[in-house]
Length: 390
Ligand SMILES: C[S@@+](CC[C@H](N)C(=O)[O-])C[C@H]1O[C@@H](n2cnc3c(N)ncnc32)[C@H](O)[C@@H]1O
Image (cartoon, rainbow, N blue to C red; front, side, top):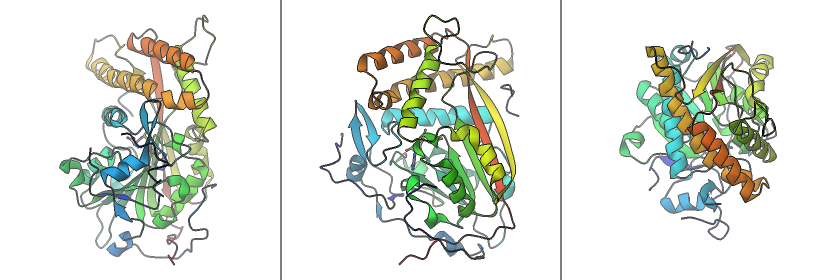
């Protein structure tokens, strides 16, 4: 699949072909340790009424399919990015399809692409170029849809892997572009450039999420909005009680819970900051630059297990079916991570098979939880300027 023309490689080093093994109220669901490129960014009270403020510097070239190959490597049969030691979920066609379906599911749950005061923050203002940064944008579908809904806004997506759709429909928008870059390398070049920062399901690729929060406080203009949506690597029972990883044979044992526990452990071994999901609200509340912190839990049924006796149940079952497919795909996507964490092939395959059967056959009625947290940057904090490039 050729990469879209408006995907640009930022400051990532592309590995040499030798080192790259190229390969080919919710609708009632229950209701910095970054190794920075630039150390000390300067601050100033810059106005953001000048559209040229959007022309910061990071792009160096267009992605070609050969660069795409150099950015990915074959790990246990799946294509994974080859330049982050942290993020190890695949970036292949199967994963692209999972992420696009997951986007449809989240949108069906939230009945929108966002929660919080997004419309207010992005409202048109004379002489002001509004802009959105989507961190870990994946296939770019959220960024694309936001570019359509807010045509007066500029949208920039950043991702480790050039996995964005190459169809002209998604790439033809003049107000949307994707950059290939590693968030863990620092984001100073974006300081003072955005009215909204969005980050969804990225904790497993972030080494220091608290450091990221601090970067975001400087990326945002005064009054800007940070919106995060993160899922836990954990399973809840039908009463929304957390399911521990019980021993096999225990009445509360769940293979899906075992799988999530193992996957979370493997992500932590790679320094993925997945515990940020529970900590984010507190961090934002404590951070001097943020105010109006809000949180909403979204409970996602896994599988169409609701008795189909109402429109509401039909909706839950629609979402549940999408979630079931998503979890089944995630079970297979996690194989390189589990093997990389030192689990034996035979154990990984048994865990995947049992967890897959439990989810497919709805042997347990489970929920997963997505936590949405958002906060505004105080209007009293001045714009942080990007560092001056030598
Ligand atoms: C589970 S996907 C979610 C994609 C998208 N946010 C969505 O909701 O559809 C996580 C994405 O974050 C990207 N990612 C993870 N760590 C990253 C990092 N350090 N820098 C840039 N992108 C990263 C991955 O490449 C992947 O595309």
